[in-house]
Length: 413
Image 1 (spheres, one colour):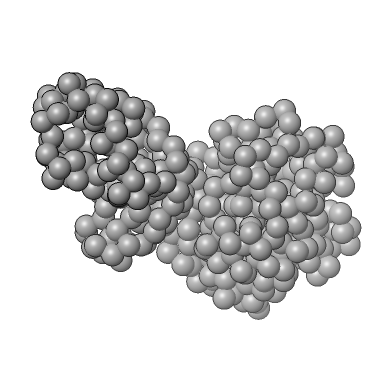
Image 2 (cartoon, rainbow, N blue to C red; image 1 turned 60 degrees about the vertical axis):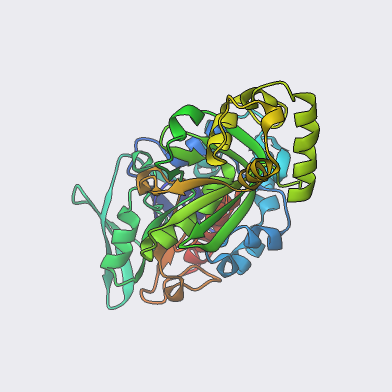
């Protein structure tokens, strides 16, 4: 019977443990926190967005950070497989907008508890509050692990599933990357991914808390377009957040890492209308409100708090009467509505990112088995690898699938 040790009790670690135990291995998960799955508990606003109910090619498309590497793992353990596993063990799921899958209970803790129960039902052992200090390997082959308190655990295979460097309070503190580096693996530099963006725009204090829907955000670095997303966003006390901002954050982080100074977010507040149609819409509104001041003449078009910033950007006094507006001034308003500019000064810290971009280089990992090409018997799974996706359940599915592949093959060593 193979002895398998899994470092990390998150999404990848739990599935690795389940797969290894299912395949007859004597399996131990070592988790540094006092309870497993802490990062899963905060995903989906505490509801746990388990996966996405789309086809596998769509999943790969939504993992722009090396999604193709996952082709084999996603086929071995699909989005339907994780749903089936949970439902077979008493946890019903539901599909919401955008194909997002959640537990019917809306409680992330139910997902974690169910996975832990499955692992233990297969005879798995869970060691909590125990930190792995080093991976023991001799002559390019795994021997086991050594914990911080000096215990040595012998093993035929070790699965490194210790997470990235975001949300360190959940245990995802970058230690997994250090363990991989210590046994010779190359590390692609870590960057925040799915992280809010900071801005020094003078409008931010007044816009804090304002949510915008059905808008398009485009990011420019040094005048060159580097990304665009359609959907929802939110103004915060430090800048901008929300689904489209999180999706755009990786290209911003990369631009900053490459030394770009001038980064701007252009918000198309009316993407369904081209400039001519928007101008016609403005003219209709302005006929209706011709005797009002500009601050009141756009209330049908924009949220109240956004009117003053838009007029300011268009160099128009908000106390000016609508019937005094020139055609050139109206055109300036149209231009601002199609590209309301928010300067971006940086990303929030890596510790606040939902996902870490970068990690163990995929060139050194077998995409079918997740086994290290450098150390026999070492398997690597989840966010510790250089893989990252958009929000919507894609990152968790990547963790589940790579964990399952690693556990399956580790048990056969």
